[in-house]
Image (cartoon, rainbow, N blue to C red; front, top):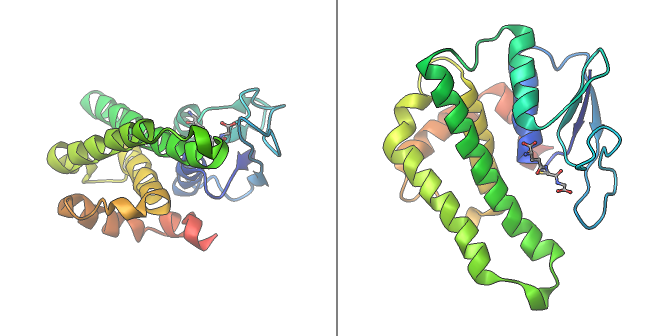
Length: 203
Ligand SMILES: N[C@@H](CCC(=O)N[C@@H](CS)C(=O)NCC(=O)O)C(=O)O
């Protein structure tokens, strides 16, 4: 398989953790490729016309995106059961959607600061994106810690990748301060070798 990735992309990190945790990283070719809406750069546009990473090209040549499709594929291929069934399935999918939403909101603030001309920087809009993140983190702290327990799951991996991205891009918001239970959970989860190996601070 080929995996198009970028070291700082939280979506790519999520899929990379799935690759490692399902034992499919060995033998997979990792190809760096990222761009932005303003400059395609090394983005894998031949494989994904949207120009986004991650993309997984399977052994039969199918280009899979986005990260949710890739993660489901890897789970299915390895029969890893990371999504579970019945009630667990819907919890895992919902928490994956919440994690993706956190990542999307933070990325939008990064693009706003990096790509938009300074004179057009829209601070209220940025704050609105960060409020989405704050609300989602509160929901995790107050409602979903129980859902993050037990055997390794898609919910754990995706929330782990999202919290890692909060540390990378919005550290000044000190998300741990009012969320001690989530912070403890994340500290434990971060010790997993797959989290360590994909930590953007160490790549
Ligand atoms: N929904 C997509 C989001 C992927 C995404 O936004 N990737 C970013 C990097 S974190 C990207 O490649 N952006 C380039 C662009 O928007 O042109 C997924 O889950 O994979």
